[in-house]
Image 1: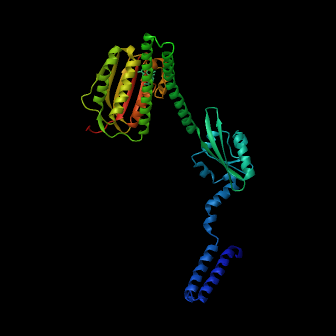
Image 2: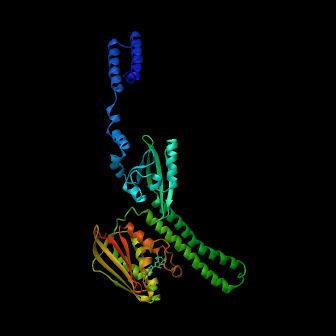
Image 3: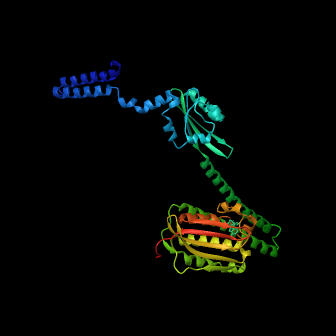
Length: 411
Ligand code: ADP
């Protein structure tokens, strides 16, 4: 008791002396001084009491969990955590763990030594360091088998010499980093090629071909083509980043898809004649109203129809159709662009909308392609809360289907 209220009684004595001093100095009436002292006394006694909730059930749960590992009530707490967590006892044996931890280390079992259940030298070393220093540590490690995965592990000391291992899966972050690095590498490679061609021709025109009028004409023509290719690439990169930037803001202008697709098809008639391809477009009687951005939708259908003309020319015709179909959140406008060309081998289908992914890079370049067209279509549709479906049977052409949510009427 003395020990418990010791500091409080010292405070009370000091306060009492100060109050008496103030009364003697006539700064305070005796009644006010006594009242103030009584309040301090009650507060001091309350503060000095053992506070029951501090050593409350939570502490008891933890204490008993740590004391009786076999029937640990801490299990439900650990099981409820979304990331992998392992609790180790003072001998670094497993006391508790959750299903995500079992997914990382299938050999985990209560009572097993950590070093046997999880053969990661970095973690074992970190646990030893935590034991030695009593301070938390964070390490990162990676796995190669069965697939590449990266983890961060936070090892913290808890209770008497117990350790808690909390895992954070870094794989998605690493993948995004890799994709970004690949993208920059691809984009600079795509730009460097025409740039190298341009500077090569400039050197030739300044040197050996200086007086050669015929060569100059030819080289200037090639240089113009390369400069246009760079401009297309930069244009596509900018459009793509603009669409991605606005992806969270769906357009809200009601538009009729039918005239948009028809105008795109009309605009590509010259290319179709050059390739000897006929465009059959089945125009519906009623409008197909979607909330959209006219320029973006025009761009998306331009890419799809142009691709069908470029890569499916051998089929001699393309068909464009409109349908309505129920979707997840209501009726959808289904626009199909079908060609009868060589089609697309199944293994390429899932990757076609990746930036710079091309089945035949030479063919794509010869057609003026940047490898960004379908990525742009995909992101435009995502911004419009729609999607792109690609179906193909090799030798029988390809069908690119857009699905967009239908809304009310156009303005
Ligand atoms: P590109 O600028 O190369 O045309 P896209 O992203 O538009 O880029 O298309 C990616 C690749 O998909 C093309 O290089 C081509 O190999 C393939 N592809 C696209 N449309 C078709 C199609 N209708 N038939 C066959 N292959 C196609």
